[in-house]
Length: 454
Image (cartoon, rainbow, N blue to C red; front, side):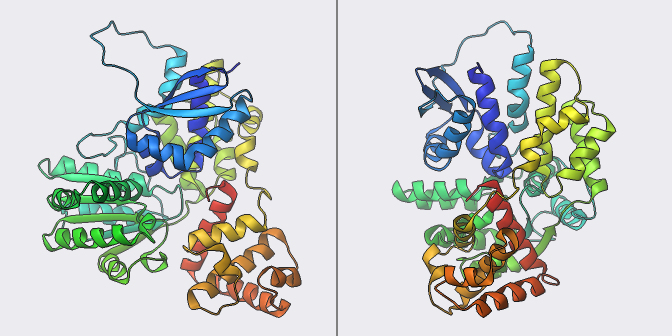
């Protein structure tokens, strides 16, 4: 029977594959299972923010993973850290189990002042043609924050290294300018702080605190979409920092003009600086990334094993790291490196997870959320501009991913004629030949559809 430590490591491993690095570090840092009795699991979290977020947003996925490994588990509860500080104790010798348990948590040693993870540096950031311009811009900012590129806006797909680059920039600025006050904040955490400050009538205190920093780094800025009050407060903070030559660094999964429900005044501010994109790494770069991460994890893998991973995981660096973690755990538990055949078995679920694992409902629901719309909006008989494009993309994906007939697609969208579905599919297909923003949107939507992160 799998024990509680191994069970939680499995939860972390699977969650990281479908969660942004920023969100994973924010909400799963210093979490663990503290008890597992009579079908009930108690999970310890570091603070009330994490407790609320895990119980509301991640509870169902955590329970699903746990029940797939232990069907006797019925309920999960969360509690703020139960452990009490203890006096000095004799340092224990590391064991195989303790090394495995530390595998993930040692990657998230956070600077309590800046919220930066010291592990993310320019030294271990692998540069390729897909990210070299973004890297160059970030390096320039680290040498002269507040002046060269302000704001610096970096966008790209899930798991391509945006968070690494942002935090590397922050760490380099801290190294070059030790007296500068730097704050790294995922947009989800920033939103939580705004909500709490408003509820506790401390919003002015929070704004004053943020206006006094020298470098603001905000990850996954697309999560501000649709949150009007948060956008309003951020707009004023942004202006105050920018007017004082304070550096602002932002990341998103898409460019500013493609973020739905974003105030125009914020969009124009984001576009007023330097916008850089991170694309998909080629095979050679993926191999370089794998070798770098093997060195970091102190694991030796044969070339054909690395080639298998690089050939089969092409669009997500975080998934490659997740694959390596599985092989590392196998290595530690069996005291041998896996060959290609063992690797195929260990990574089978990861490699084949996306295959045909979608349906009409999931596609429509994902697109609606991606564009900050209601599902009924896509299905309604309306020609509103903000509805037409998402609806066309939905029709295109029903055709390309599910191979549905044009008449069937038309019926699903308010009984439209099959010619409407044909036009929509051909229009999106043609535009994707030379519209990188549309390609990026469609790829992101497909990632969310197949990863289950709706």
